[in-house]
Figure (cartoon, helix red, strand yellow):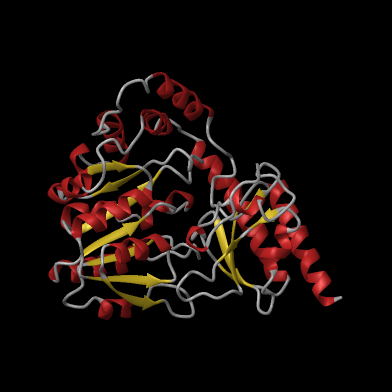
Length: 366
């Protein structure tokens, strides 16, 4: 039986849609080389796979709706109390639940950035204002002026998606100070910060006690290569707000396999360091190769790169013909059909991508 085709309402707003892409090519999902989703090239650690199987054997029972064991382990890692942690079915689940709990009338979103902030706000009926990032694509101090008296909620992604660029802690503290005086909640998404070696210089976790208006979003998805399992969490000193967010979703939002996987992930000791060693070297190699082709590359610090291919509007299609899936970025507010994002993968896979992009541009010049 032929699988159903995507309708207009089913068009994905994210990368990682190997399912839909395989319908457009002779390549199966397994054959497609997916650079559109930013997942750790080392793959899922063995300890997590074993924990998932353990969780399956316990799945004849309801999972702990409060994720008590997982939160206890997270508290040790993050240096906070377990009461300041709420777990959810991935980062996106918590974004929607936050918005549903707050029901903001006016919200501020930087642009371009992760699409789910705006989608969740639209669904909640919020009026959305944008702080359009300058040509550098970096958050600047003038963003303070964009926080109006009636701004109920502000989203910031650090490092930003899709560019991978970082916002310094000092500017974030200034934003939090102003937001606090105006009773504006600030959600800072640090889901990709694990891929930044200088993570401790950028995380805002240490400011939680001073800012009850601060929420920090984190995820197991990217670093531990488990996007299909769905596991994320929010940190906040505002326990009353966390309880409202919890009640804004269904009670068993984190499955037993996901909880077991999270606990196992927190026991990994050298996995992040091995990841950083690989990602840093390969990101630099990809950036160099793209720059040599004359493409404009934003110098991101995460496990992905965003670049502009002026005039080359069919790069996605031409690479898909070769069995390679990349991320088109024209649905990001502030980007165009000339903008793309690629994940950093293994050396062999990155070599294949570099060769394919070179072939596309060589044929363009022929």
